[in-house]
Image (tube, rainbow, N blue to C red; front, side, top):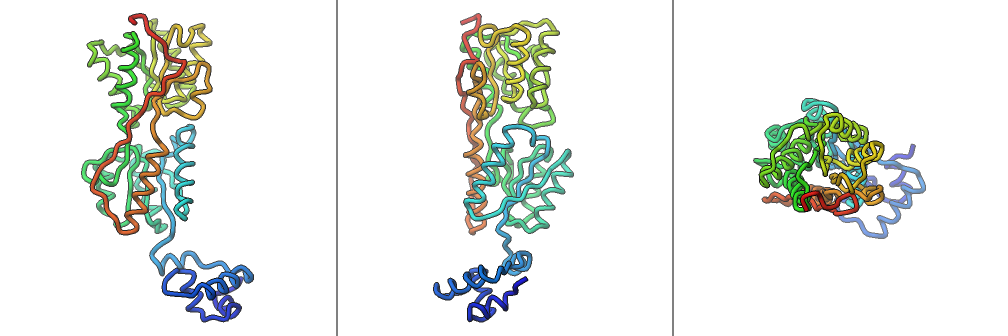
Length: 337
């Protein structure tokens, strides 16, 4: 394997000059830089990245912590795709660490990325509490951003969507279109997002003086199968409903399939709304109405803010991204319209 000294000899410069070209520290003329880069290409020299990171205190990497329970869904694929592309646009590598199944394992994943000397870290938390996240941010010098969770003490270190308000708005839309018996398939109730979306559903009913009926609520697990099983459970209870809200699009798609198999027409007999507005939502039959969570914009803001912090900037505000209800064919007027 070629060494830096061999590159220097081939380029006709000193080893120190090669080092300055690679680290970007100190002035080197453009002609000299070109000779050094040509020598690197001809010799096949590969710099020791660990040594360079120790010397410069920079690794040109961003870390992302996500629990593996999100990996199976379309939403996570979109999140990871945007994060990887935008990190690449910033000339950096994205390193993924698995938060697994507990707050302690999320902590371990964060520490793993810190030990790898990631320049900055994004946390998409499921188990860590807001207080624990605030503590982690305060105890580390590397910039840390929290995605989709509202922090109390470090407001400039979070970017989130108001899941409760978005859910409330979706249910109010159904009520405005004449629906009163509205069923709800929750997400996993150990998930903050799942809890907030359920809370928004209940608040909308209460606001319109419609009783919250537990028999119209079933727990899902974010998957199409759990959406189908949720519909089966509702039908087995013998409760009637003219509309159904599923806490994500995967479950909504499973619910539509189960209703079809049960000879219940969507939207003629049951209107359906999902969440996340995944890419396939407009292509289901009928096209799925869904609350669009602006994942692209949230990821961009998160990465832009981290890069700004790495460049010495600072923020003193908190930003929320509102959801938007995308109305499609799965929603029609209810019996009280």
